[in-house]
Image (tube, rainbow, N blue to C red; front, side, top):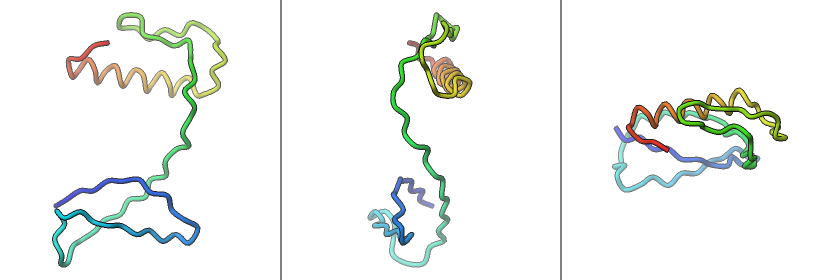
Length: 89
């Protein structure tokens, strides 16, 4: 089984053409398609949320307009992965 992952822009006519790599042999294949819309890219917004050692600290309002809870969850999850993988900041 070969797993391929890519991103694509779906045009108005909803036709998507895909050139498969050489590792996919000619012949009959079972193909699964998963459509997962990407979120709109957000601008890099400086926040007053920073790591202080092993603690994520929010130092008050900085004009951050995003979802602070989601930002904290993402930062916490990323830091957890760093700790598990033995890397540090």
